[in-house]
Image (cartoon, rainbow, N blue to C red; front, side, top):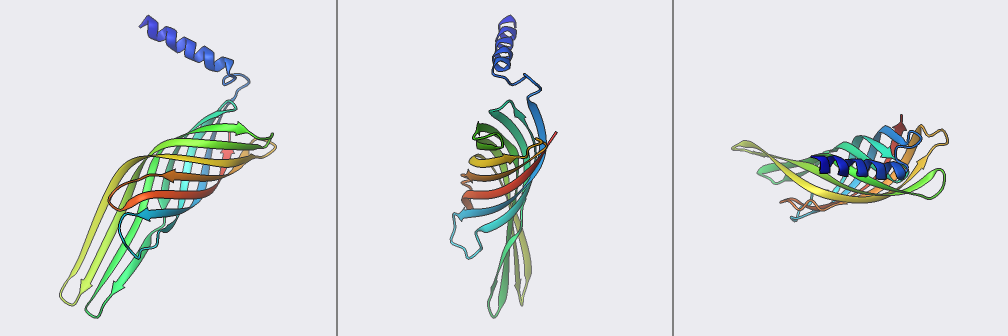
Length: 194
């Protein structure tokens, strides 16, 4: 127990020397991002692979170079309809995700930061099939939960009063489930800094 307390105290002192706790350098924030996502399907389909999404997030910037963020994301629905003379098949898909990202910030100027991210997220992909024919109507829903890592990079502009920032971000996620191989997300977001 004493060794654990000693290691924790060394860890805290080390970070204090790095400037994390000096001058109230912990800055919590809330934000929202709007994304344009491109999915790489594992199957051949005419379903559109481009999605829009909205993400809410809450996090904190710790010192000049580190940060952590929790997020929840929801995509718009994509759908396609297959029609023949005898039947119709409607296919609808969308996804939700939640998780956390760790940020590394690299100062370019007083207002601009380049950043990289690494995170872990749970992706819930929802599929819905509606089959309609002269004989029957049938609906099938499937849900696939996948935990995946994600990496990203971006550019952030912080306004002069340090109360808000705007960011542009790219993230790559290797989902690797039955339907989606990977996802590329391009997003723009705003943060309100407390």
